Amino acid sequence: MKDKEKKQDLSKVERISDEVKRLNRQFTKIDSKTKKIVKSLIENAAFMTITLEDLWDAINTNGCVCEYQNGENQWGTKKSPEVEIYNTMIKNHSTVIKLLTDMIPKDVKPQKENDGFDEFVNSR
Image (tube, rainbow, N blue to C red; front, side, top):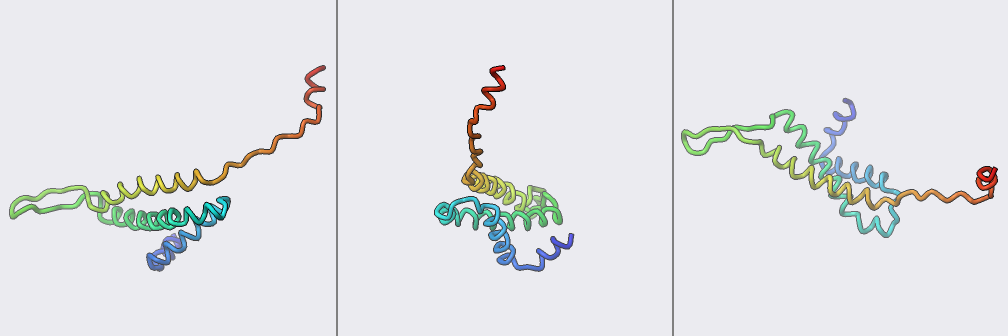
């Protein structure tokens, strides 16, 4: 809980900057040439992460629906604007994160040197 309170004391720009740093640490295996290319993806992912956190808090505080008035006597409820923005942004965020994680090189396990031991054991 302290971590969340600490985050809320920071401005949105500072929180985004911290998230950019965190994402850069996660994607250290991306070679430097590719990292220059994906810099904007990382920055956008950080922006969306922080914005999604803020939207999450707003939805938890205000609920998923809001009242509206069309004209003098027409009232109703509708999905809150925060929910609509959240739903759209979470899809985009997922796409950006998938693009980034797909760029991380897969660890290739080196082949064991064939010392003949397996053949010896299997031939008996």
